[in-house]
Image (tube, chains in turn yellow, brown):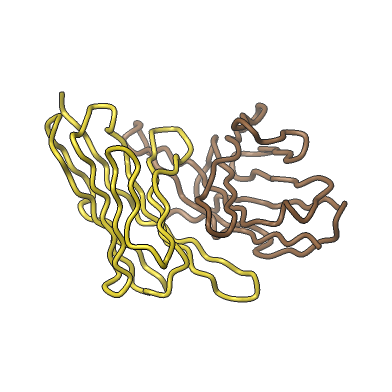
Length: 115
Length: 119
């Protein structure tokens, strides 16, 4: 059974700092890995998607890396801003055959960026 | 931890038929549920926000007459794909918003997903 772990559970940083969020998964046979942002009471916002054949993706101040062999992904946020405060979730998608998929989420990292 | 179920887990239907997918929060009440869909090689995308007792809020580009959402009770939301076509084939996943006592906890629990294949 796939398990996804995110460390730390919560993180507080001063504005302007660069930071790294970690995600690890137990089964390396993933289809893809996704990073999401969750604001209270809102649906998930997709940030970055890394296919299993890729090693990283970048979007603006965000960079996500994937190391399938070690079962790890990191989300790097450069020059953090108060507006980045949210919970960040990673999720891995496994294709289990016959058209069936399974998506497993981590519990998230709650980020607070202090002005 | 809180559990969210979806039914069915996998459905195959003919083009032109309608398919209903259920999302249930098994051990907590959820005034808000969310529906997502994912195409292969693409990210999970929010379709709509389902609110108990009121109309769902759809994201831009999502046809509300095509994807009917009914939040019938505090533990059940349904997504009906009407007049399904092969391009509707996708992985649909729901989540339920859990609010802890005193508002100290605000998180979402995800269902296992439903794989829809339209022939």
